Amino acid sequence: MDNLRFKGKWNELKGLAKQEWADLTEDDLLYEEGKEEELYGRIQQKTGKARDEIRDWFNRQVDKL
Figure 1 (cartoon, rainbow, N blue to C red):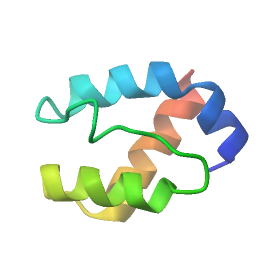
Figure 2 (figure 1 turned 120 degrees about the horizontal axis):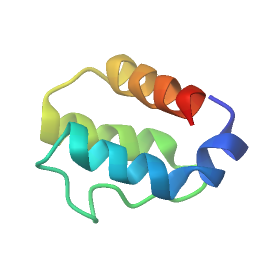
Figure 3 (figure 1 turned 180 degrees about the vertical axis):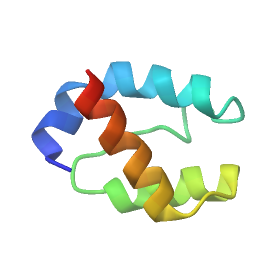
């Protein structure tokens, strides 16, 4: 994923992620540039989904926006 596109759409993506995975909190979705893998790890721990599945979900959402 293009980090610039990801960063630019983060607020929208965060809202979509909360809708997709209701257990996520603001702290779980804390985005820091260059630490995307940590973000995926936090989501993975809460949802039980694989990192690749989470990354693919975000990529699809960015493409839709």
